[in-house]
Length: 261
Ligand SMILES: C[S@@+](CC[C@H](N)C(=O)[O-])C[C@H]1O[C@@H](n2cnc3c(N)ncnc32)[C@H](O)[C@@H]1O
Image (cartoon, rainbow, N blue to C red; front, side):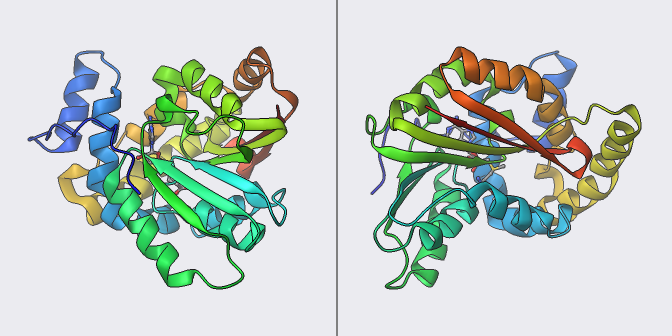
């Protein structure tokens, strides 16, 4: 099941947080190697962290992301992590559909596969999990009715053009994308409140659950680093996507992008 093109992760010996802070001191942005190592190390308590920091709301946003899926569809979950969207998708597309989750973190994928084994039944779609970099897409050309992703865009900022090309190449004509992510709010007051929450409550949970491995400012930095919603919709248009829409939740802290090939 594992597509073995992911380069072995070089161990990052000091804690992830000190490595990240050092990168910031050097004015360097985290590369794919760092991001891969980070998710591999945070996989074990990722779900609990996600649930606590979003106060349970992440489940509602993921549900909205999957709303457009219909029975029988073939779906690719880009950066599936521990499988929250994948598990929702296997239920929505049902036994006549299929879902493929891809991720470059093996620890994340193992958790996703274990969770799938627990919930699968005669009404759920078959799910496949593939260890690969998003940059290697398409896995299969023009094979998917939909590509979904949750909280991944900020992490793939370095190679977004290559990845969007691969996403488009993975879709059938008329196929859809549904991408959900944290975005930096445009209103100054909300932005300050969001920043404060991220640096206080989120950092607190991060430290409790992951200890020194939690890079406190990564979440906020990554949202700031990534394209603003307007710029990302333009990017989608440059890549030939149509019917582009963005919906924001929680005063612009969360954005759901949708488009068609
Ligand atoms: C914040 S987690 C989100 C996981 C899941 N989609 C969710 O909704 O909870 C981001 C995931 O994207 C994966 N990821 C980040 N960059 C990637 C890349 N270039 N190729 C493949 N996977 C990547 C990480 O390993 C991680 O599992």
